Image (cartoon, rainbow, N blue to C red; front, side):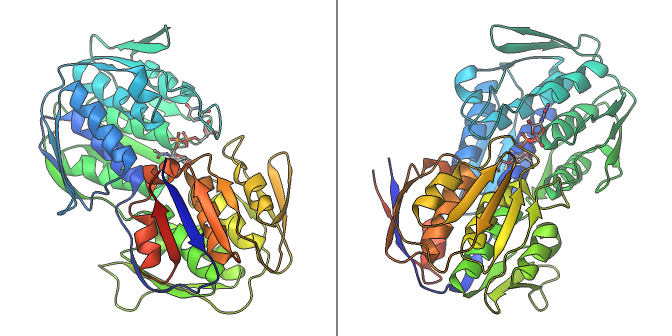
Length: 424
Ligand code: EPZ
């Protein structure tokens, strides 16, 4: 297994290209099941998770071609196999996003239950309840969801009892081909959902309320292919913003959209990290991040967008570990998303977890150490801690990182980090 070795203490300076968003690419790829296509996705990131989704769609019978040089993915064809097997779904729970499209277009799907993961049990009850309200019949048998809709899905008014990104995406896609009007109330409002909705409209869907928590979808008979640029990855951008902050440097996040950082930008400013839109970057995107003064402890609570993103919680905790004063970080979305804490404490951080909150008392300096990653964002938070630590840090199990960050060590080395991958 590959490891990453880094030595901290260098302020990062220069430009970092921000890729297409992992959490937009995955539902957009699943949307290819809704029509013959071709669906052309530009600004497509090359990640382990997109490769897993490509494999899943290919075993359904779709053609998936990813030109990684052109950063363009072309998907199309007809599904000949309606089963999403356990060995693929357990690798990546976003595989469950094929359920809505398969049911909507083929009126049948057999998808493995995703099971939990390191950060929580992550059930799919909201996905299933919504699809049943749209007329699907779903039986759970031997770890699989056997779903049928012999007469096709019908429009329904669906109230989400809690905000769910995946359930919103699954039902949004399913509703595009349902008979009649569907309304999703208390829908998630993440930029990746807006991106999916815009792509579906380009494919011929009728959707209103984009950007709000009420989406209205008028079903159509069929969708067609389209070309769609994937939105830049706000979590990758936020991660590198924390890297600039923790090292006291200044970086340009090429292609990033400031408004997609939501509350993360405001909280970073409160902590002493300047986050501004790059001059004349209206169309191209671009965010400049620089550390103005010392870092200050700031309290944070994770919430659905536009609140502070749970996917930024671990990275922000690394920043707070070397801030002046204390920070209370409360995780409200997942039940077990503090696994980076023991590893950071081995690097000299002073963090105490009480239930869903962590108290971080800033220290002047962390010390490098061999550390273990447990999930995608925990992994990258240890890289950030290593960038600020004295001495050498070795991050093990970096396969977690490769799921969601493309060429992470190359991008950091290009702005001055002393970092390299040690092939395992
Ligand atoms: C998406 O996961 C993201 N993944 C996650 O990013 C992100 O952390 C999460 O949204 C929240 O923003 C992708 O987009 C591929 P949810 P998802 O449904 O859709 C509960 C990363 O690091 N829930 O919004 O699975 C659930 O247990 C990953 O890139 C139910 O109870 O998240 C959680 O507590 C990690 N029943 C909360 O809702 C359901 O049917 C939010 O989950 C669905 C969810």
